[in-house]
Amino acid sequence: MILEGGLVGRDLKSIDFDQITDVTVNVDLFDKLFNQNTGSIFVMTAGSFRQTKNGAVPHPHEMDSIHDPYVLFKKLKEVSHSVKTDVNYPNAMRPATNPGYNTTVTNNPFEKKTS
Image 1 (cartoon, helix red, strand yellow):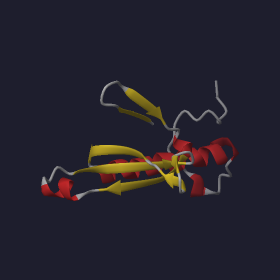
Image 2: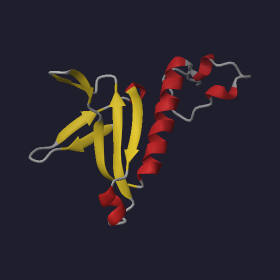
Image 3: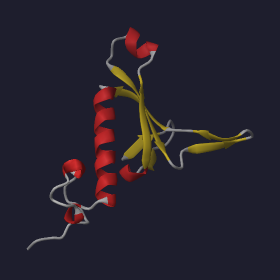
């Protein structure tokens, strides 16, 4: 996932889907009052903490003014889960009788290529 932002220059941030530990949605009063069907999505990773004098505090990656935030939230969770599952249980190594790890990621680098 690539996040773009910045007021003066263009800032880019890259987050690997398997590094996502938590995703939350926030639809605030402003979003509700103006009925824009927008909200904010916060993505936590293992490294998204900020050091303060009181210790480390969570500092999620934030995406503001996202149209249909619940749709994007669901897609982020699905892709994150699928990528983590493929890393831990590559399709080629899964037993045929275990449908619990049926993911939707295509072009899996762990699968054997057939000619």
